[in-house]
Image 1 (cartoon, helix red, strand yellow):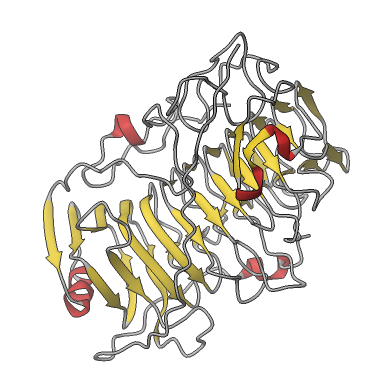
Image 2 (image 1 turned 30 degrees about the vertical axis):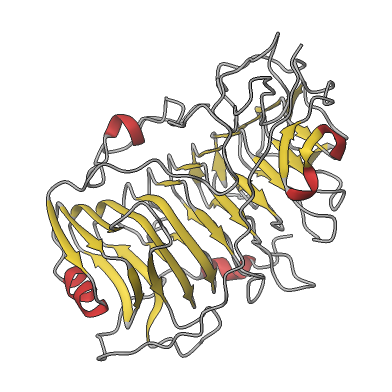
Length: 464
């Protein structure tokens, strides 16, 4: 029998909204988001496949970051809600050190392959979007330390329509292969903190803090033929609104037509619209995307969590394949919202060992829908409502536990969804799965006689 208690440190950031204005010499016009077609959708109520071209971002080992067949590296101990990122290796190739905004702009304009721009501690109020474009490979922008809050790229404000030449923070496109963005904060831009446009491949976003985006925080756009950005990784990052978005047109991550994305060990907080609106999913991967892996993330007070696909398409599937596993989703009872996990027109998707607690704000914390959603597997999920199949969707549901109560968790009211000793209906009651070998904390499964249901594997050892 397993017993004991665990403590979870929840670091709730209450950062002030920045009132910053762009300053400095005028810069040439910078390309802005090239795909706004998603606006017409504003009212939307298997293990990973082999990694594309194998191009690594500067200083990143392929074996540690790009191998989707392995579980991601984490210390085998209790994680805090705010993700603690493992340090990256030092940058390889040419390094450009900058300490002022003009130096930063100059370094980006002259960027060539195998170069990393390293930012000293400080706040850089951007006079223009940092645009990385052309045929360059293995390039990066990173803070000088592993503290993502010590380097800040600041915009004019998420509601500031007079944004000058800085509608977004970082923009890539036109043949950029292997770009890394790491160890910094990007905040208060009218459009996107980060936008990957067509022609970008294999981007890595590691240990960033994104605050108050006017639209999507990370946007990955397709080209005119629908070919998107492939093999992206977003990990160990915090994506949040201090209060709410300026309207409902937002997502934490929005991928169009992308293949092989990994979204892991991030915190999404307050991805919500103003009262009376329904914001988009914190993670939305759609528009003919495929083979996405979303694991080990935490969603706190978001209107919606993870959505593979969104609409029923006549010209193929909105998403296909992929795995959603070991995620925590918590929403308080005074925050309206929709499903925590939503699979739409996405065949052969696996939804495994997630914990979704919406405090009764929506009857079906996990939903799958549309006739194109076939071959789904939903196993070992722990939710406080029901799993619902809609509009002809078909899946196999095994050992899911519905109707969870707050008494099953260490501190559900604070978003701590680790299992309490009293959660006997979940402990050792799951189905062993080859696709799920550890839990949200990185503990191996099983810790007892069998797998536990949900994202947490209960263990008696203190500090694990």
